[in-house]
Length: 174
Image (cartoon, helix red, strand yellow):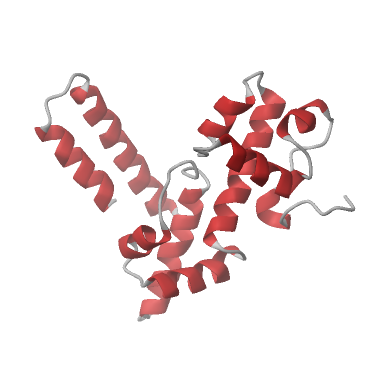
């Protein structure tokens, strides 16, 4: 939220073409984020501990991450934004998500790539870019690690879209 508000404030003072449209879009994005946060399930306790607050913040972050996986964000920045040390963030992320931050992001990206490969005619390079990969070779390595085949070959098969966030990478025997 802070980063979104900061960007909104910056855009208000910046006078580039399309600035007003960007401000409207950023405002709508912030409103949507607030709406999602307000509908999150609340567990009422008399006095929440810092660990409970950190866990809830991280659970919200993980839920948002499934829709923002394409953004390049470092662990240090995310931890700082959530008010945690890097060590606390990585430990708590693993407890909440069941895997490391990098592995979670990679799994979500590859799941999305599989959906795009199956449902669109887009080329592999544009799909890799849309999923957050800057280098095509990184995309190919990650895709093969999770599906055991190249993206073009996977597209030609009739395999279902893997739900990697739940079950981890597809095993060799599958």
